[in-house]
Image (cartoon, rainbow, N blue to C red; front, side):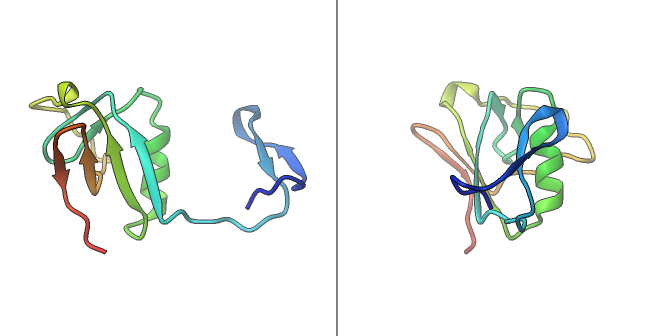
Length: 100
């Protein structure tokens, strides 16, 4: 876990990461959506970073997509590695559900 005085090292893509600390699994992730479906699949920015992260976190981490109503799309080609979010919140609607 990172704190202000945590030593850092250069990680993948030259991004600084904490050195010698334990990994922390988040309880909740907020994810930006540039598109989404009613069944809680999200369209992201195309790098696959969130997809890879979500695939290793497991179901203990609650995933919340944040989007505008206008970004709802009727169909999205879902690939085998894509996982639906638990819930998507827009300024007027909620899709999915939380079971906590």
